[in-house]
Image (cartoon, rainbow, N blue to C red):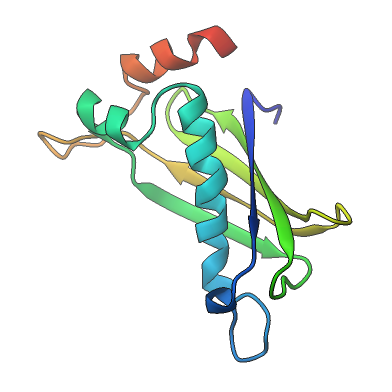
Length: 138
């Protein structure tokens, strides 16, 4: 799938990310995905405050992570988020690379759906506000 919109975030692995084997604990990868997802949504001015104000929450209903190489303490990484679906759900693909070498360390994706915060009902298509925010990029 071709990306509709892409964003990157750079960060460095900290001690608290590590497991007893001195590599990033598998559960922390989604935290790194979130850094790039926030950058992506900020590009269209639809971050958390704007989502909340629009009356929609966007819970993650699916998370897939594929580990390629270990991430270690003080390693600098670049996390890329690619928006690949938006009409009925947000599907964002992620790639984490070693900032020094460009080697792929991890990939994955998330799927999020719009939920009306007043009724708690899941929306079967993207709300008009998301369409408006994405229009300049389509």
